Length: 242
Image (cartoon, rainbow, N blue to C red; front, side, top):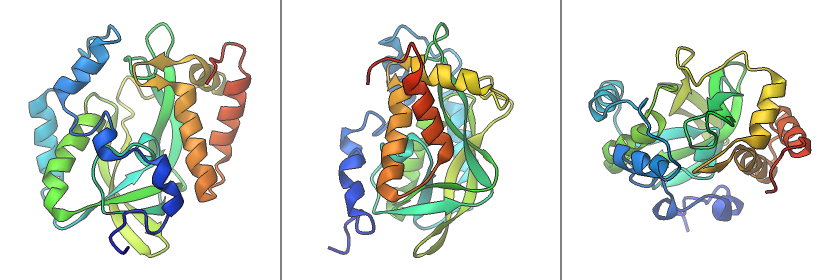
């Protein structure tokens, strides 16, 4: 079936949440506030709708046609948007790093922060690229901005991603070093502790890293950083059962 989005990686099918089943499908600021309110958080640090939309329109102004999106973290298993194709990809000039300290209620709280991956400048990063059909780009980038640019944390960027079928220009979101959630110098001990103990309305930080490791196993990706973090977080004395 040539229009199967998983035609290149059929074994990924059960590992990727269908868009209509994702909590991020048609994601909005109102949905984010409702989600965090369930965990007792306010989301007072969120960007306004007007700020996000102005940035999205300006950033996407020069784009036309289908859009590729590079996923290096939760987008790999829960993109939250319909896509017509997914490929394994290697993005040059960037690297996955666990410098995002999550204390806003998603996978951690102020009294027990979590840690998640961010994309920073570096030597290259393995992940997935998802292709959004041209007719859906405006709608789906609106909701993607609502998810990725809901608060100061990331900055939109285009990267070159190499796939088995050639290179593509892909949208992604890089760590914003001016954002309070981004800690480039976070110690390894804190990365392990936050991974082991962080928990919020989206689940635990440990579950997040476990999902990454599951995808890497399926794709044959060797990521020593993820493997080491997962092993040490599981061994941490206060690690929750998963």
